[in-house]
Length: 171
Image (cartoon, rainbow, N blue to C red; front, side, top):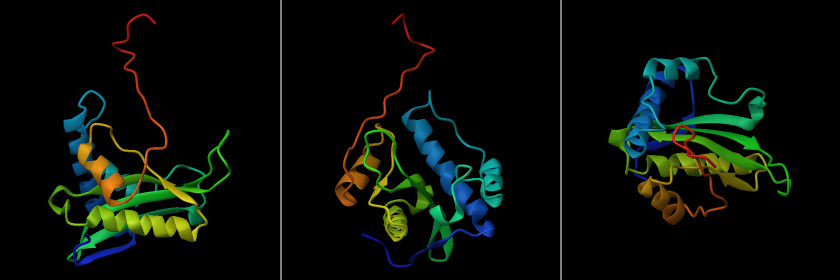
């Protein structure tokens, strides 16, 4: 359920520090899940990236990318970065809204901020002719799994697998 007082709007450069806090909080959570693969991000570097508008991949047209922020009681507490992609290969040539980053500050979690951000990004993608939205989350993040699947209706469409080559034995 989305709590009253949440407003989702386009990112502005003066939101960069608050956005960085949400992303750093997310990195802290990911480190707790899988410390061998994740690191705590530097908030100053993240804020600089957002201030400079470098949060999206190079070459994505301006009308096919968005950064939205969520305010809770007037303070920015979350962010979603989205852009349009069209898969290659055997995929039908549908447009997908890729939710590349979804992050909420630790104190604002479980208050509907993430839901408000994802629903706003879905609407943004639909307005751009996307037939699907797609995102990934860490397989060890059971809360995220329940959130995306049970609350928002996402379903598995593939599996991302990783192999630590530093520890791999002879194949």
